[in-house]
Image (cartoon, rainbow, N blue to C red):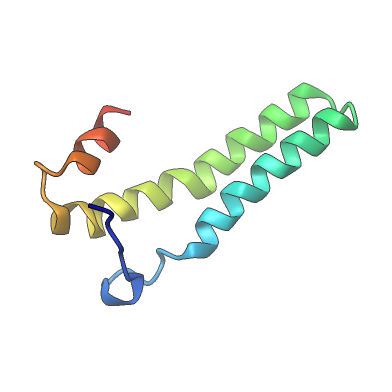
Length: 83
């Protein structure tokens, strides 16, 4: 059964679809960087900064806001915690 989550119902306004857009934008930037022969060390530094500044806080908010609603026995929560 697909899960539809309406983010406005959560008490976590920092969670937004924009976060997912920024993740896709990161992928586009990396692909473009590879095509333009950007120094891999520069791209790695960008990825590390993106991870620390965007991904870690985003996934922390998801764990705080969404996981309790779904419950620890939910298949998607189990999959997320394994990764």
